[in-house]
Image (cartoon, rainbow, N blue to C red; front, side, top):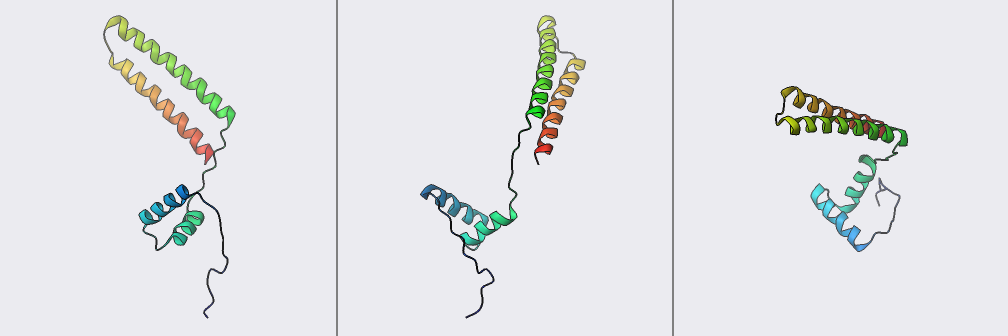
Length: 111
């Protein structure tokens, strides 16, 4: 008999619901069989580990709060005057961009 390339057997337990999910994902992945799908998922897929740095989240929360206060001031001015000025809209776009940059910064630290 020919020697197997993969000669170590791994076993693990799943619920019936988990088995169905794995079967569906195997089919969607177009792998030959469930073993190939599970092996590829375990070896090739990235495993994300989230270490939510409390300080980074606190800083981001403070910055988002400041931006929210600024946006409220612009909204109050628009409500008082009935006009939305291009400078105000540009300012708000800049503030939203700051939020995205903060989020990207934190997410990059988590990777």
